[in-house]
View: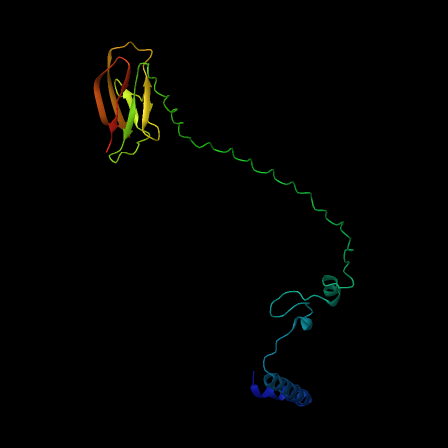
Length: 204
């Protein structure tokens, strides 16, 4: 096909529609220039017909929904304040008093033996006086006859003592000892008692 014949065939059409083509090209150029000058545009969800945030994609609550979710203080029903009955204090029971401890009995020293009876001048017995080196009476001295196991008597405050042997036969020999603090300080061994017998002792 000859290109010249084609050009001759389409030339009348080109001349007929040339103004329209030029107008469309100019409008398209202006629209593109305006788009380039405005820069990139971010379409919101409202323009696209979607309710919600375009950045997060979360649905946006409508005013009616917000009003239903957050009612006004007047719309919220407040419970009526009821007068609570006054609390009555429960009676407190007083604790019972602690038991009174029983008084402890302190050990008491055994009572001293009774003072020796006065010597019987005609009886069978041993008596006398125990003194210190200065001649003062020595009280509280233990006097034993026989083995020094127990005190037959103790000297009085003035140092005197007496042991009755009326129930014993006459003529027996006795070992007389004087103890202070459990220690024998003076002893008289083999004393024959046939009547009233006097034995004095000096404890320094």
